[in-house]
Image 1 (cartoon, rainbow, N blue to C red):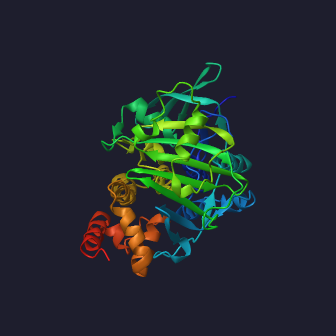
Image 2: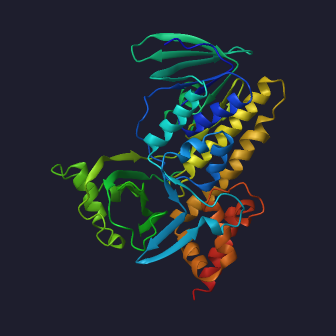
Image 3: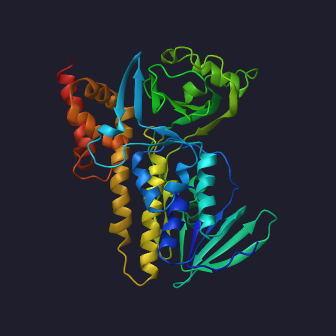
Length: 415
């Protein structure tokens, strides 16, 4: 299929790329999406936050998505040693959406690109960007199809939303490792007709199994649930030396070690074979430059603990699409302040929560807020809902300092 020159090329058809393309099209410019894979395809990042609903609505996807019957997500539940605390999104400090969805990303991402195509936005599947050059006026892309045929195309701007593929960061040498601590993920889809322990099927459940290791439970409302371990690679890989065990056997053995599950997944039937991701945690040294912007997981990926991935994808994709469109229409854009610094402020809030989570401080605060402090709980709930740019919230203005102060207070007042 011939790929025509356009005003803006978007690399990647996931949430970041789809939202970016939609925002460009809304501005009146032409846009095309280049996607290496064919949809539907499997990817993790299945639990959305309320903040991303704003971006999906603004980009024109929401009404279409509402017809797909995705499971409603009203909050998050954390469980430790048989005790649970709940954060209901309707009780957040920040005004905004009070719910989101739990989605199979294969169906969700395909719904997004189907919507783009209905609007007349070309989405070219099975195409790989192999080179990027900018001559001061135009971007030049080399795009290779699955038969090895290469096309050379031109645009005024390129938005990289290629996710874990990290096309422009790899081509331009922009990769930057973040954090020194290695973590792994081991996850699967299982048949699941058993209600959660406290019937909160409209919440994501996070089970804290031991220090630095946790388990997600994301029900899709279809009899299938996403289950995944994240944390210490040694714990996750403890059965590696036993060659007689399949990946399903290893995953089942790990599940059976988690007493807080009360045997819910003691003999799971796998819909999707367990898969691993090792040593994640990567960023880009530059997320914008002459003729390009990088968004979503291509620019930064922190950790899956607070389901920030899709929210950051839609927020950064929306912003990149708007700013690039304004620039091509003649405006002077301060990419450092309007894009990089803005996104970094939200990332820093999520990162402070992630670091405190693995240090063991944040779980203590979660359970303390559940029992003792309504205002504190609302402020935390807003972060869990994705409202990490609300400067009225102390956890946004001074995330690390706020967490440290509350942690110190709890240590001094254990009862």
